[in-house]
Image (tube, rainbow, N blue to C red):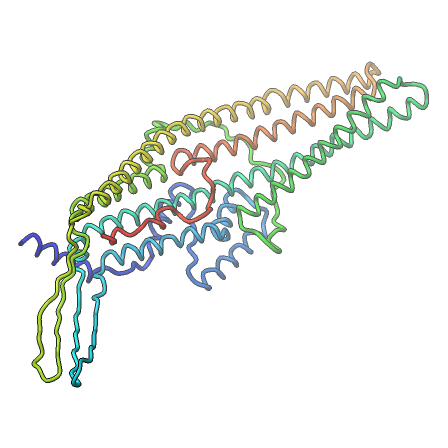
Length: 467
């Protein structure tokens, strides 16, 4: 009896304290995101916030974009991210509702009998079971709210990752178009020269057709590269939420240089287990499900318990006062179905958490391998291939000046040199994308997860207050 009284008193106390926070839970999301991306997202809850964000985006787009400014623009301008951030408000409303008493139920009945007699019944009912289970239900919703915060931070990290990837890809694609234009121009000159030499009788037809075939290949490669540049630019526009005049965004001429040293993460897998937002969200989900299972076990035999005041008055007779109790009798269902469902849901959450952890460890190992390989390849092109091609070109130029080789050999060498530079650009792009992927796998979430699409799972979780 004492325990019941204490529980009821705690429930009433919580009901008095349950209210919305001033930040809506966003400060925690901002902190988690900034720790992993270096920047905090913007939560636009009013027209003024939206207008301020638009002004800042316009200011940023006046300058050539960088990887950092691309992330800032995405945080300000990506509507999918804003939609997911509003899942915080949904989760917090469930949390506050779980901490408040259910509204009392009032009923009124009026019955006219023969002889002008009128009978009136009134009653007010309170959900006592909901009040008794309120502390546990609030703990369940508190963990679901924290899970939603992790999900929202994960969505923000995903938007930052996609913005960086799209930025590097767009710059590289734009750079490759310039190199392939040079290849095509060289092929065009070589093809035209071959045609004229054939007409003059100084070149055989087979060699001329080879030059013509190379020109045709260079033309198709350039067309594909130009389309790829458009596609990558549109991908960047989607990641940053650009439209209208914002589409005239300026990109830098080339990608950032390769860093001097590699990042060697220590205890990478352990870091992922402690920092990854999807792992933390899965743990919170399992914890809230465990509490929900405990609540179901406690209330398995009682699903409805309502108590209230009732009175009845009949014309010409004194008023009758009393009370009314509504209790579900567990005659046909002892709560076994609810308990079985809760246990299955809990085990599902446990296995999901284990799956997320195993995948996270694997993704860290894979991401580091890709990062290391991309760095070595880019360094190989920068330190070995390009200098070697440069020396070969210098030797060919000397031989051409000495009339030891012809103009076709010189043009072919020029094309090969341009191609080696193009390969370096692609390797550099792959490195920066691998760098972004590794950082995401270590502290963010699954690198392959979609960015800011659809509502967060935590927001759709049913309220534990249903007990």
